[in-house]
Length: 200
Image (cartoon, rainbow, N blue to C red):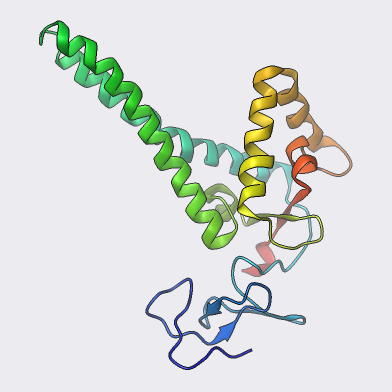
């Protein structure tokens, strides 16, 4: 379906929209339009194939995602550590406050990393690592997965369970070697990881 005249692309503000996504209704430009036999879809809603992503690609993508979330926190932590070392002769008050600054830096850094991932999920339906390796998390029927499902069911629920029982994390990782190639968090969230490399 063609977009109304003068409407702008939801993914590229300032660019005129050419079509309307057949699934979510977003206005999209020509670059963002993926034409299939069942309609025209935006980058988030387009799922060209349900071929499972390879275990190797998923592992490396997950590793990259861990760095994206963790590196800003670690960087700001060490900045705080450096400041504390530099202020070692600044008196007891400086030594009391700087550990709090270090922890605050870690929290801010973690927030930055998570914010980057959330923006990527909202815009493309993919984390940084999965976008680099052309992987996408979708519902088992191929439809887009909701952001709350990714955050709460694929991540938070499993992390809480792993804190209560460390064995849960091991089971989650090993389940990828099963016939369905789905980790425990995929079963909880009713998702699969697919290869979208055919999308170009």
